[in-house]
Image 1 (cartoon, rainbow, N blue to C red):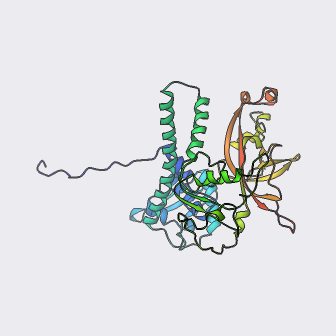
Image 2: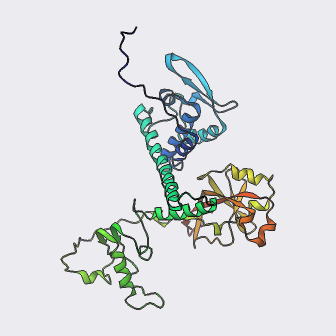
Image 3: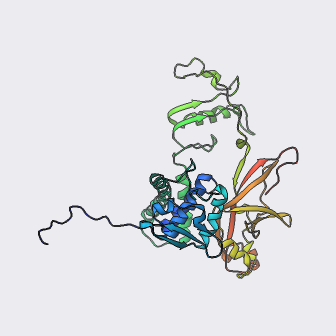
Length: 389
């Protein structure tokens, strides 16, 4: 036995995701799209059941049983069969996907865009895509923690200090040029960007208490934000500043093009409500045993909401018909527009001591959660208008 040579390669150890990494992976897909719903349901079933790649891709419609004791039938190696029970969160997610595609008896539960079974490479691409997205947020958070430790010198400070610092650090992070950044010329002051396009419209307006040259100076500010390329757009026959550049050797004038009609989606408005637009004490004015606290605890970012009348102020209602929050009197919807969709943007934790001393006596519990929504508005139709959801 001693003369038998040992293996000339090392055995690679199998690595597993921890709880935080698994949660980040499952939160990566965008469940509002068909592809995101496919990826999210597939990953959730894979994480909970531990099925092999071949078993997961071979699942057919009859293999999934959701009534009574929910489970999935699987066909493993050596033609061995078995069943794996499903948790409640998987049972709640799978029907959404089955309703979306309604697989027949011989259809795969997780089909490709062509309608056939997923290949092993396609499954690997799905996992890799969302692993990269999940790792991006964890990497950014690690970067923020490292920056905070460097800035504070490792000193022990209150948790609130880190929370406020992280929020400010996140705002600075968003100013990095990693994609298309749309902002006004005033907001662009102090920034330097590789490529800048200055849009047309409104450059002949003079604000209150401004001198006639104020628009020209602001246009100059917008132009000088560019480090490499600068594009100046003209939408009309005349432009208060571009007309003066005609014939300049440093300018490349392109012939005009016919622009397509704007799609209806451009008329939509997305609103991420601030804390000032939400009733922060809605759940806090109810005792700790009130069902509203359990209802809010079951919500996650992205869950759908509807708006319902609540004594003249709009209540936030979850998909089970339970009121989980309320908008503040300070909330003002866009004029002539109706809310056609609302979802959970974030869940904020509040405590009795966080509020104004004048209102602390109204709180009936020491800690509660606040639902902060994001809303989609569309113009009201002249014939009846859109019905707020």
